[in-house]
Length: 127
Image (cartoon, rainbow, N blue to C red; front, side, top):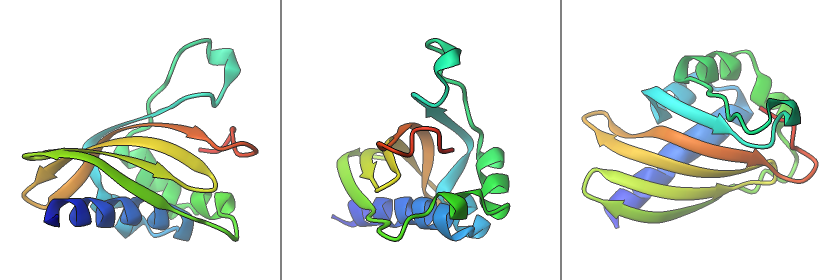
């Protein structure tokens, strides 16, 4: 399935770009209107999710924040759950993050528009 492979490439740009500090790969993966929502990051937020924007992700990637979160066994597993026309859904599991992702096909390719993520055990406070 061509769309599933393209979505997987987008998600690898996102994850590998984050861990490698490659802001160009991160920017290529994200829709400008990204809504990235963390869960379980700060218990004091009491049910609030918060939102991380595309620009914040690109800037954090360029600053090398993801490099500080990388582990020797990066293990990025992408499961494209569904594709319907120009929308898709995937689950990504890594040693650091567990993330549900929604994507949209644009004229520039598949872009991540929404994520809900949580840090894996031992990485709960990670961005």
